[in-house]
Image (cartoon, rainbow, N blue to C red):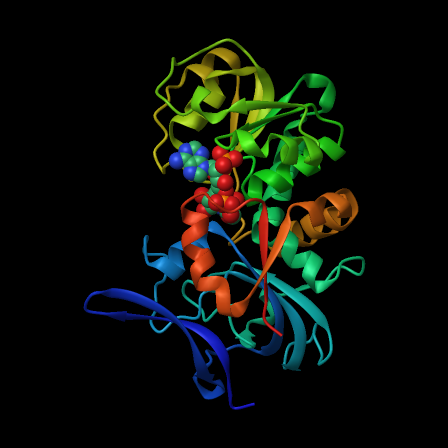
Length: 328
Ligand code: NDP
C-alpha cells in the first residue's frame, strides 16, 4: 500500500485547509513502528487542528488526529511485533508528528501502549484521549486522598468528552457527582452516566467571589477560566480540583484565597507527555473501572469521511460525549 487514505491539513495564504486525500507512505515521518490504524477519535484539540481555529498544528502538511488504535504492521522496537494490537495518545501526534486520521501511522514504539486485553479497538477509542485524561484526573484526586466520604465532587463540561467519562468513572467509584452543563436537555443523559445532581454552568461561568459557600470536596474541570475560579472558590476545606482543559478559556482569574485560607489544591493534568507508567496504569484502570454500557451510551461514531465536519461541531459545543472515527 504505497498510497493510503488520510485527512491532510495544508497551509496556504488564506489559512489552513483540511481535506480527505491520498497520502504517500514514503512521506510518513520517522519512527520504528508502522501501525495499520483501525479507529481514531474526535477530541477538542482535533477540532482546533481541523478548523485551524488555534495553532495546534506545528508542521505542514499535517495529518491531524491525536489518538488511534490499530495493529502493528512492521516494528523495529523490541516491545512490539507485527500483529500486536496497540493504542496511542498524544506525544504530539496530529500536532508535530503525522497523526491518526489515516490508514497508516509511523511512530516511536515508546509512544505505544498495548491495547488492554479486555477492550476492543473501538471501545479503547470510545474512551480515547478525553477518557484517558479523565482517568488521569481521577488518579490525581485519589493521590490527593479524595474519597467519596469526603463529600460531593463536581464535573464541569459534563456533557463533553472528558466530562462524560469523568462523570461515569466517579459515579462508578461511589462519588456523589454534581454535573455542570450548559445543555439542560442532556440532564437525562448525565443522570444515566451516574450524575446525582445537574447544575447550570451559568452558575459558574461569570466572575465570582474569591471565596464562596463550600459546595464540593473536589472536582474535575475541563473548562478553565471563570468556571475553574468559581469551582476553586466553592471547594471545601482541604479539597482538590484536577484541571485539564480550557473550553471556556485559558485564563484563570482567581486569587490565592482558596489555597491559603482553605488549603485547597489545584492539580494540573497533562495527557500528552504523561510518562508511560502512568499511561499503563490509567488504561488498566479504564478497562476495569469504566462501565461498558455507560461507555456505549456516551459514544457515537463517524467514518473518516465525516471527521472534518465533526471538527467544527465539537468547537461549537454540539458534540455529546465521545466520537469514534472509523478508519478501516
Ligand atoms: P468537548 O468539546 O467534548 O467538551 C468540552 C465541554 O465543555 C463542552 O461539551 C461543554 O460542556 C463545555 N463548554 C464548552 N464551551 C464552554 C464555555 N464557553 N463555557 C463553559 N463550558 C463550555 O471537549 P473534550 O472533552 O475533548 O475536551 C475538553 C477540554 O479538555 C478541552 O479544552 C481540551 O483541550 C482539554 N483536554 C486536555 C487534555 C490534557 O492533556 N490536559 C486532554 C484532553 C482534553 P456542556 O455542554 O456540558 O456545558
